[in-house]
Length: 350
Image 1 (cartoon, one colour):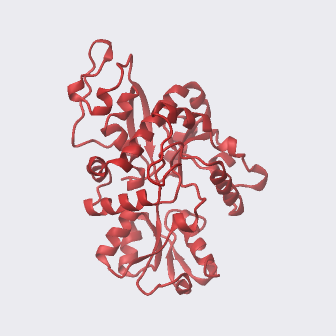
Image 2 (image 1 turned 45 degrees about the horizontal axis):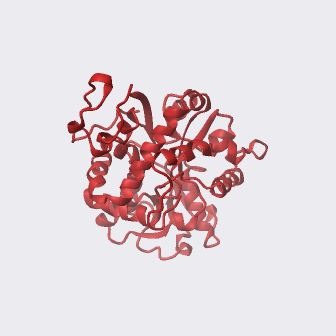
């Protein structure tokens, strides 16, 4: 677990009488906020260290003053994977808002999703130059980092193989560190891997033959990628805090769609990725409506994802949770109201 992102553009909060905020030192969002009786503290987790572009909504919310607008003092915590022991502990113990999956609920962890940060998959299945179709993957080496058999990369590879009538026995899955995905593809050590768009850009710059075989949001349109959640007791105890924290991130997501120039420097700083790679990722993510603009929730999407987890053996059939047990829609609904009501940005509505 790493310390929070530190902005290059220091935003100084000066609390004076009644803890009101000195307008000249704050971003526009915070300037318009009502004076806060107190600044409530909360930890916001991100699933990767450093974060991928898709995970940067909390950084935008903090940098642009949306958390402060809602009287929140947010500390952003980076985890070494959304399913890392530290992230699981934070969820179970109620010490941070983190990515929560139906699998955790199905395993009896007393957590619940409250908002969909990114309902749709951001990654693309990216392959070497000689792979033109999924059939060409037969006999190839595919990446299985981040969990090996049963992990995300293995699962996505299997899904791609199924489109060509192939099985996991028709290829060789190669494990290793997550950081080795791009170098492995560029050097030819692997022939297929699921990559975030900024990593697709980096890989193609280093090896122009590398290309996208399929965008995973097109292959699995009903797969629920990333939802924030928390310990159920914490949600009940600090419900208003949860609503305000989600409202701040909804406002951040809407700004990400509407003002590329404003958010790009923040995302570049948070991710440490080249500006050109972030620009590419921004276009892919906004074009495919990966970030939410409202609740980030669709009951049918959640139901499909639960069923998929059961089918893959991640949740025992007799432990299958209901959609309502997995996702508390009321908090997301109230947060949308607090963020100004539902919106549609381009074709994006979730």
